[in-house]
Image 1 (cartoon, rainbow, N blue to C red):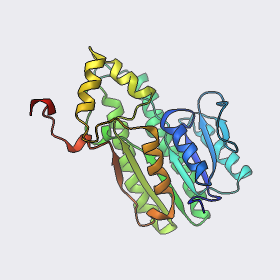
Image 2 (cartoon, one colour):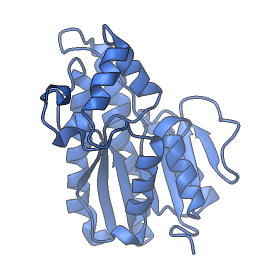
Image 3 (cartoon, rainbow, N blue to C red):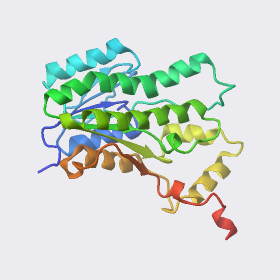
Image 4 (cartoon, helix red, strand yellow):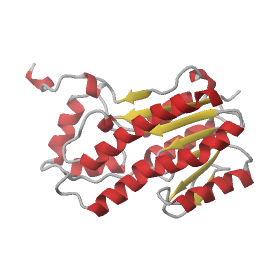
Length: 254
């Protein structure tokens, strides 16, 4: 039997990259999935996936998502907060608009989704919330000030939800991806003066010998959503191929 047979999952930012891989993995394990994003309905989702165009930084849009879940499924068992954006700037270079845009999706959006769906999870006897954080929330990437801060917020909120709502049967964990090869990662490398050299240097710092794939994160989401992880809550799970465990010294010098 599939690990998530007949479970109801909500996934934000499911149209591409890590989010799309998460949607696919949940469906393959038997879950029924509603996913959302700010764009149009992708044409090639797995059968049975429900799409809703929504901006999770807007309270009314999140409330509408909740109504759709109630009408279509009657409950929710799994919430995956994946939607996120990236702005490559230092603090002095960042505008108030940058702050509002990035924090609106990466921080406020996670807060709004959790606030909306925690009561529904509790009413159904509990469930699993999985927030997509980042190694950048624990280790600051250069010229990524707002992004780093937003992911640190996600990690803190994750722990608070685990503590406050464990008695309701709700588990809450965060996944901290490293370099996962998506459009966002490609854009980050393009910031470098020499993108090819930057990518080669980053790869050399991975003990695993490769960059991550969206499926690496999706597999962890399935585990955290399933009963296989029912004693795990309030944790940040780093999936980075060993990147942050390694010394900053150049491997090629030894």
